[in-house]
Structures are given as C-alpha cells and as structure tokens.
Image (cartoon, rainbow, N blue to C red):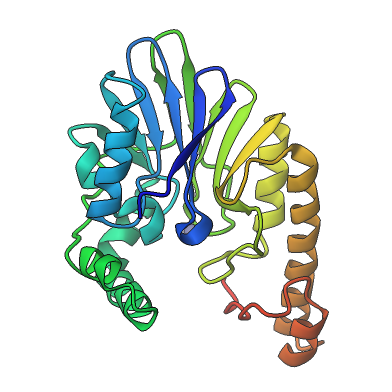
Length: 259
Ligand SMILES: [Zn+2]
C-alpha cells in the first residue's frame, strides 16, 4: 500500500500520487503552515500520508477535504490536530453516508481479496470536518483559497487554489471518466467554467495525473454532452438506453435526475 510518490507541480506545491484508485492528494507549503488536500481512504492510509507529509515538512498542518467520498476523507484522523475545512454539505454527507460507504467499499476490497484494506476501512470512523469552506487561508507568505464554485461531481465540491495551481477534487478526473454516481450533471459544466475562470495553468485532479486547462475544457465539453443527454431523457425525448449509447462515457451508470 506504500505506493505513494510526490510530484512537485509548482514551487512548494506538491501532489501525491497513488496506484490505489489512481488517487491524487495535495500538499501546499507556506512559511508557517502546510495545507493537506484530501486524506486518503482509511485510517491506515491516512497514517501513511501523515508520515509522508512529515517527511516533507514539520510545519503545523491544515486540511482541506474536497468532498465526502471515502477515498478523499476517511484518513483524516492521522492528520489531527489540524483544522479540517470542508463545505458544510460535505460534513453533513460524511455524517450521513460514512457507514454505507464503509460497508460498500469494504465489501469491494474483500471481493478483490484485499482483506488488509477491507479491515482498515471497516475499522475507520472518519473524523468530521470542523471548519467551513469557502475560506481563505494564510499559510504564511502564501494564500490559499478554498472555493465552492457550484455543484458537479457532488453538491459540495471544494476546489483549492494557490497561485496558478488548482486542486480540483473529483470535478476533474484524468485517466478514467469522471464519476457520475452522486453528480449534479446539469451544473457540472458551469462549475468547470468557473474553475477555468480562475485561470489555472496546472489542475490537479482527484484521480490521475496533473493536467492543464485544455484537458479540463475537453472534459467540460464531454460533461456538457452528458448533461444534454440527461436533460433529453428527463424531458421524455430520449430513452435511457439510447442516451447511454450516445454518451461520451457509455459504460458509466446513468445518474438519477436531480432537482
Ligand atoms: Zn469522488
């Protein structure tokens, strides 16, 4: 499981890449504090991340959680006593869904024969975020802005901006299609427009390698196609099977309409 590797995406701004779920988390270094973006998927993985962070910096830590999916926030315990920022709906979603996510994903790992991860996940009760985003954080000589730019991958995605780097959480996914399971598809393209309006040169996705704005624009166009198909199904103009066939992501489940 100790497959993490740091990638420096800008001066004092690092991404940490994992083979497991192709996950990407972040670390932003100030002069007085360091910010960790997302905490991995269980207490054991969080401890690995905390140790890796301590290999880079001894500064007091702050945590930003991009959204409530387990792989981004179940590892938080090892990073305490850091303040943990998230959108209030993220905090509510962790509270409401932690048990179900734990059961679903522990079963997933058991089916794959990864009992160590299943056991770690089954034993993880993720701490809830205790500070609200949006927020602007002064890390000492470096300002980080935690934005909520609208719904998309979830209804509570937070993106983390520092200079011309944006950590996008799962609003952007490289190497695999975006996950639509809890998505607000109709709002997602507009949220990516707002992300692109931040004028990043580097966008760090929640899964996959760091990308540039052109990649985000292309994924935004695909998501707009999905949103249009979704609207056509909701309006009774198209059946789900046809919509799925025409989708840029035909193998993905079709999300339930959201009001
Ligand atoms: Zn997610």
